[in-house]
Length: 297
Image (cartoon, rainbow, N blue to C red; front, side, top):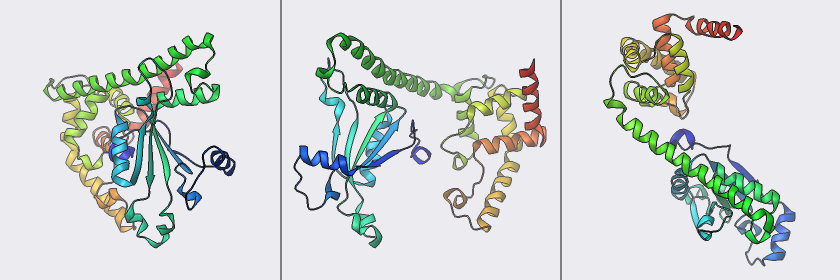
């Protein structure tokens, strides 16, 4: 998801199959009338923990486009404005019909899974409240309620402030192209410049812009103008190197998406090829040795 749709996960996707003891406890509490236990909505659980709240709706849309969604529920909407509590988006989904047309998948036609989508801040609240057994406000001892409300408000503020950061970054990036050529490089300016001057097909979901910025500064490349000159000077040679590497990989039998698109190096790889053309093959070891000497002082 991160790579194809630029939706960053806070942690790897979590999943679990409900244990028999949990199934037994649930059946005692709620009678079940299905034909098979595979029809239990939450027999299979999948949890997506995202970094940013703005990505929740995009993630839900992707799930609906991919799977058969039987129901969706926003737990946060069930809370009144003065309440604290568990916030998460829940969806019940089945495998898509295209999967079920494959004989080896047909046996999963009755299988349903509960998919939870939440932010990292929401997950912190869910994990802590589960451990403390404070999932409901009535379960909290009166002397502790004030502190619990404060923690809940702080975690909601984390999500809101990250949204503010993202909005301000979007505004900043929108004016980058109108800025002067000698603007000092930063991570956002570097990404914007590479998006403009390098082939987008080479871009990967995560690129180490901060590390690249450090390398460039060590070599005296500190402005957008200097970076533009470097790219324009060596780009054709670097792109040919990239295409040749991709062709060689294809000849060895690789059939991944990047090889099919005729690309091999990421943005980071292309930038380092540019630096090799400008400063020689040993530039990388030289700047790291320089950094080590500076640390020893």
